[in-house]
Amino acid sequence: MKRLLLLLLVISAICLPGYAPAHALDPGYLDLSSMGQERWRVTWRVPDVNGRKMPIKARLPENCSQEPSPKPSFDGRAWTTSWVATCPGGLEGGVIEIAGLEQTRTETLVRYELEPGQTQVHRLTSTETAFIVPEDPGVLDIFSSYVALGVTHILEGLDHLLFVFALVLLVRDHSRLFWAITAFTLAHSITLASATLGWLNIPPPPVEAVIALSIVFLAYELSLSPENRDPLAERFPWIVAFAFGLIHGLGFAGALREIGLPEGDIPLALFAFNVGVELGQILFVVVVLAIGFAARLLYPAVKERAVQFERVTGYGIGSLAAFWVIERIAGF
Image (cartoon, rainbow, N blue to C red; front, top):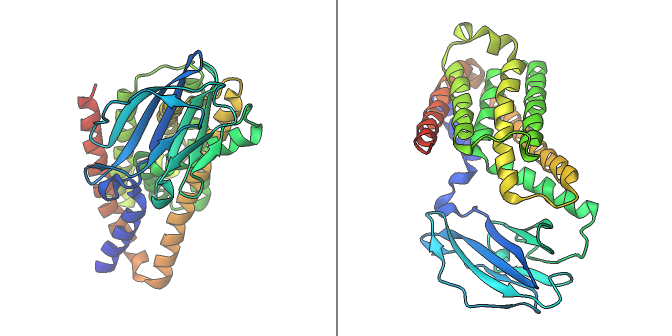
């Protein structure tokens, strides 16, 4: 039993990256919205570390001057401030840098407009702390940026990861698991595209509550012995995965709307973001399966206690998801 609990703790550590101390992995966010006449509204959101701003600083191109910015306000997770910058000649060809980012384990999303409505996005990390604003971002730049954003979003999305994790535990047959993951992918791709393009418009709180409920459903199935589980979930998991995938796609779309899409390259950015989500999802599934294989290889007794492990995991996941349901319903 001790080995079983140890394995549970290891997998929990992988599944809970967002709960690092002091939100050390929260991303920064720099937004430059064009106001016309070579002026930009700058919004700078800095992650919190132990009650203080993370020691990173946004540096705009050298041709930009700025009005005095007000003191940042704290919203419980990050510090946000805003000001107006004047950049004679525009942003093109200038360097945007996040100083100090190389000393952190986080990243910063830079969203900027060369002209009003012409949104572009660039992701900076500890290994790439600055970039030159291109006059016309190429296809490869847009594709790579949105793929990276998709991977980051899925790996930082604890609710989506817990759903996939529960699905992996519930579906023991690898061929059925493949079709279940494929169905989940197809479903969330449909609603991700539909919601992002404006064909569907559902408020975020109900969507988030149903996503949490989908996790509760799988967690409940895991808490039961195999012979007492829902035959539909056991024999046709792809149906369950497809149905809930439609809802999860709306959650992905909400995140993508916050990031913004580049004007004139919406289909490419949408496709790239979805590719990134799938790459992150596949990476997570491979890691979970590898841990399970290693555990069975090193500790043969784990296989005999699989049902106990699933039950304990089901209660843990279900309790957390039920809390999310209550929290998100309260936010309606």
